[in-house]
Length: 307
Image 1 (tube, one colour):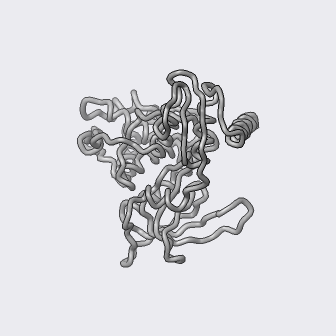
Image 2 (cartoon, rainbow, N blue to C red):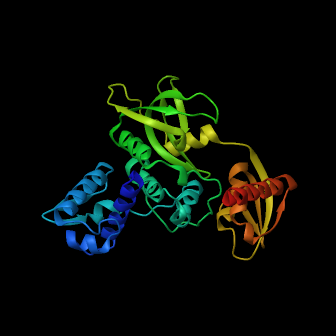
Image 3 (cartoon, rainbow, N blue to C red):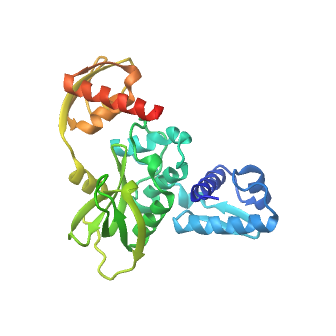
């Protein structure tokens, strides 16, 4: 059984218990939770014990005693907050992930908000289609190691591939959190070797090690702010004409003029990807260079889908 199967099973268990009124027996889990069926009572109990221990290491308040498993919802469900546009775009990918091999990886990235950066889980934010996003490429075990390091303030060492064809680098980082931005997922922290704040795309990280140190560097500002400061790209202006009722994500950072949204000084990469995600409901895009980039991104997504 693969690591992805184990993570998916643990996600299924967590959400089954979130929807339950109380503790559930091992037999109930075997009958109702995908991934636990077809096992002897002893094998089932051993599997549940292992999965619960792993979930608890990620700060999920789940318990297994005397043949029953339950989740403390009061500790798990946090008070609601408003998500930023970047967070909303990442959370909105949830529906798309049913078709990806690493569904469990995204589920853990949702727990990133609980275990690492402190933001709250929410699935009612406006959805943005996933076009060339990192979510389906995340390795569940790598993400688990990173989250554990963040939670317990452990220095991480890992291999990092900065670009295709480049030499792999061994990096040493005091991790602060995992942050979604523009459909990409980043580890943010203090680069010990370079003595500076740095961000690393998580899907380019492998072979993670952890070490407890006495000189762990803590952040002085929010991790989302660090990522946006270091990665803020080219700025653009645009006017986008949409079908009625479409484009809430664009409108949240623009001025509406009828069916038009007018955007001034927004990050170009975010703009192009967001317009592309609304392609079926977009009537016009100005200026020409932004429209050209949107078309190119859609063509790339189509080619990748046919590959």
